Length: 325
Image 1 (cartoon, one colour):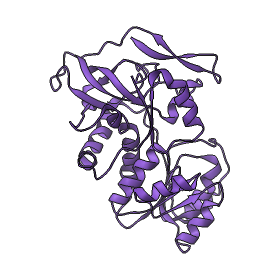
Image 2 (cartoon, rainbow, N blue to C red):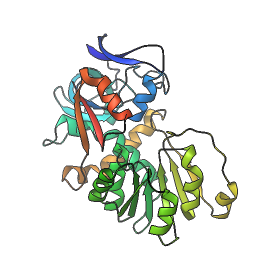
Image 3 (cartoon, rainbow, N blue to C red):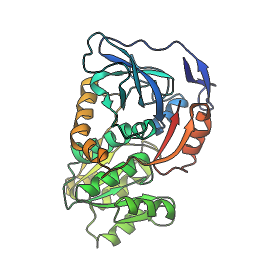
């Protein structure tokens, strides 16, 4: 089958199309003819030699797929050949065929394209798990979502707003901030022009926020803690500025803060099945009826994968970047 392979020596890796044997489904997996997949920051890290897949998962990049079932494991009785499905995978999305545990495969609504379906799993699963399952955000609370123009950011804005929370975001351009506001954000902060901590203090009359969803890491940590209210929750889901920094632990104790780290890929299959089910129960109906929408920035072909990675690395996208096979 056709698949994206890495060439290089780490750090300077280039992606190109190659030919490899197709995967074989286990007794609980579906073989899927992939019609679309999507980029995630984790793919950029893996391309450079970091963030390896869990044992047993494909070394091919790609954490989410949408396509049609072409093979079925012997213990699967809930899907048929030809069914349209989407879902989260541990790897293997950048290829013509991939495997997925049937308990993590979700039927694609009849009026969705494969590209729309591929734009959903990683970002909506991540946003829901962090903002609600871990962060316990409730109606009337206030959340700051960093990187509001990212895939997770665009999903998080929508679900937090839909749940009745007050949403603030950071983004790097006025255009992205305006799009965030269209999705439900109350206000946006251009992090290139303004210190987000000072601006949050102004916007909230000094009260701060209940929850922060952060992808940046070290550079933002102390300021994130400073703007949290008593019993506030910091959800750490990325480390774009690094993982090591000094902080004042006194503020954590004094305000009784929670710092919660989260990463999806290394979790067990049982945990991922539960994450999938929580998403299906809480947000799939709203996505089906159009109340919420997967936000797609650009669709590239699989052959344009290197260009797509460079596009993401330049932070040009608002929402998801899709690869269609």
